Length: 119
Image (tube, rainbow, N blue to C red; front, side, top):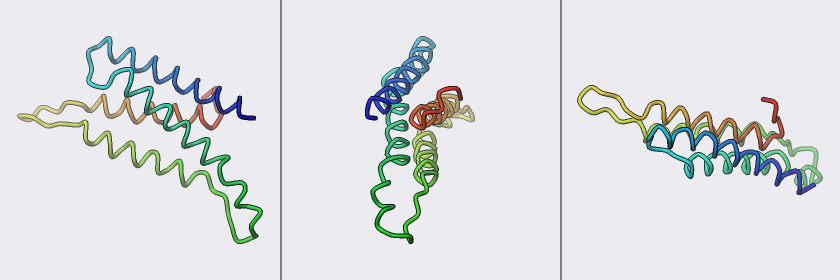
């Protein structure tokens, strides 16, 4: 079963690499490393969210497993990081596309971690 998780992590890293490579070639701030780390981290958190708490379900009927709660917090955290990339200088806004790209890369990493490769 662990080989499936490794494949998911590698797929997320490849997607993050491709996005980061494109951004690096356009001389944007966030490049390969940033996008790979975001995609890989989001995939890891999704894997933990989906499969890391099943042992808790055997403790009783009162315990509910809801992986969407962890996923929603990935989006919140990445949104917070993205907000730090947006700068306003003399009525000129920069970093908006970079922030959106990081947010989308996290979404792609989450999709890979959840095993929804087609999406």
